[in-house]
Length: 219
Image (cartoon, rainbow, N blue to C red; front, side, top):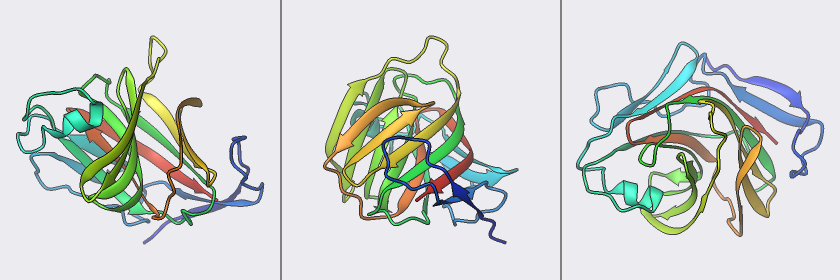
């Protein structure tokens, strides 16, 4: 049975023109209420499973077919066969062309240059989406069209020395710019990237695990 928690949310960020009576829809993963893609069978790349009230995405690393993707994700050349990625997505209950906010509470494994996590959005299908990804030193925005990276922005990011592995991610769109936060810290802002599609998701890269406790859509 689908389970959606719908409340009246007060916008906490100053960047969005979201009114105090905005709708909030929260997925708590007690069931697959938003029809997230799952893969629980044994896979060389990884798994995405909803169980015990969380979504767990795991990429296993060490797969020759997927390893070349690391160069595109990090901007650092690496040998083919070093890593894999895995993703899950749903089609969010928002109008992507209007201002919105997405907040997710997650836990991750320790980051490294070849152990990334990220959020994908404006997702139409496997080859067409935007994403923010980060590791222990870099954050990337990438734009995929027909399976190819056709544009990206990379910048360094300075984390606190004892970086928390339990985090709150927040994506904001005000119709003019996209802003991505981790634990309230703005780590990247992008302009001139219109959003057409409501697909939203998560992925891991390298030998990494991402546990999503809940995700909230505010509009």
